Length: 217
View 1 (cartoon, rainbow, N blue to C red):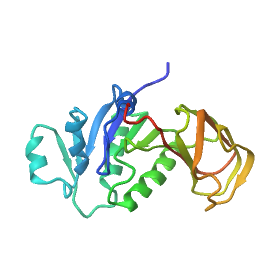
View 2: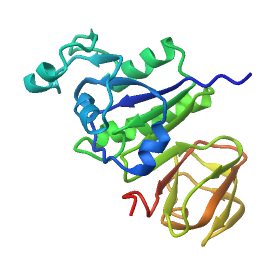
View 3: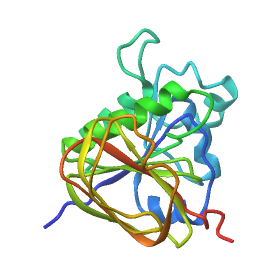
């Protein structure tokens, strides 16, 4: 029987509550990473643990959630608060993780790290998604993957290496077993015609989408 232990990790980046996001996080267990705790109230969630060095958590936030167990770490550490939260989720049995607040926000370095770290975790077998509520991203597996997007959704494929055997189906601009060079903009700003199917033979890449109906309107 397939395990299903979803975890939602609240990160410090921008996050917008939407009907789509509410459906995606479903019955996930929740872990907050430092300042990401500020999203808990808006999402009407109570994390089971709060991880970090708490340098991004103002006193007002700490006072608002006095009963959430905390796992404190020193400010001088080798991992980000988000990575520590992911490690804690894995220790608790996570086999599927949503990183909320992972895209956009004031720290571009953190957003890029979340993307590359997600690709590494996915390569080790973890089902992982990143979201800001407005944008969503998934590391691409070797082989064939289908993403359920409404027609007219914008999407891009960001490659972190050369990618070979890339095929795109269900989109305005299609490709068939294309070899995509690292750094190429060839796969930016495509448009979904419905569910989009991506196939790659080799390489590391991320599928980044902006569904048109995120507001629920």
